[in-house]
Length: 390
Ligand SMILES: Cc1cc2nc3c(=O)[nH]c(=O)nc-3n(C[C@H](O)[C@H](O)[C@H](O)COP(=O)(O)O)c2cc1C
Image (tube, rainbow, N blue to C red; front, top):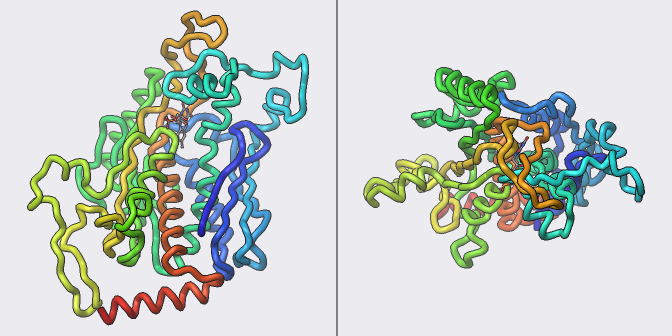
């Protein structure tokens, strides 16, 4: 079974990703992993933190001579900002260092600050926000990079692009070539495939920056090359669409997840929504003439592109702070302001790629198994033959 977990606080020493269950023999392209880490940091509207951090994935275990060895992989990502927080967040008991603690007692609406403080019985939301922060997603992207490297061996590629920032929306479908190009382009401010729409998106971010406000938006993750037959319809908690939805929904600020044109489909008629089936004799594969389902039917991949959209709410921390109530005095106060991003849609897409890649890789490991990549490949090739001969 493929699994991953993360550890680390936003301003602690480091973040950790722990990945277990990849077979031995997967080639590990270190440059690719570092590039993924860098991509997560990009985007117009990010805060000052991205200028402090230069994320590097430091692989501690599970990889030798450029290949996985089947053992758990541990990755460490240093927090450069730690040097400014050592006194505030020491591991050892530090009685009397109250000033350095940077307590947060005015919980920010839209954050885990208040429910977390209540749940953990803390009159300081600092420890809650340290872990709830989306800085944690650096570790997810490191783990996702391993999932992508594994999927790459079977011809699967997972990419993303931005389809809405605030009120500005891309009003057409993007081609695969456009999505590939925008993922290669590290200079693009908002990773939208249409430059005129991207300019409007940038203006939207500039507007909220000036106003002390924030924006959300929609990213779309597309996975190409996924074979039909991953996931299953037999049990509710084994359906792959459900697993992917959970994974994308777990991204900080994600409030809705959509497959294909799922939202518009709900208010259309069946004849306008279902994807008709054809057989391509040359490829020896059944296909659909459209992909409104987003590549999954009944919780099983159908051989089409997996298309998943993550809807991000506007960033919660506002320079023009909203009303809050102090955790100790209970009096009306302005919510705390911590240095903050105002738009994270492009980064959300990169994190979305990591989460989708991890779910697809997990489904691959479940279906094709294998302790070594060679064994997995034998099983995969056998299944391809089954589809050829169907
Ligand atoms: C890449 C990324 C960066 C984020 N940066 C910030 C930020 O700088 N300030 C902020 O208030 N929220 C930020 N968020 C969102 C919060 O982490 C999130 O809204 C909060 O933890 C509450 O979780 P929830 O919105 O999922 O309920 C970011 C989210 C993502 C995906």
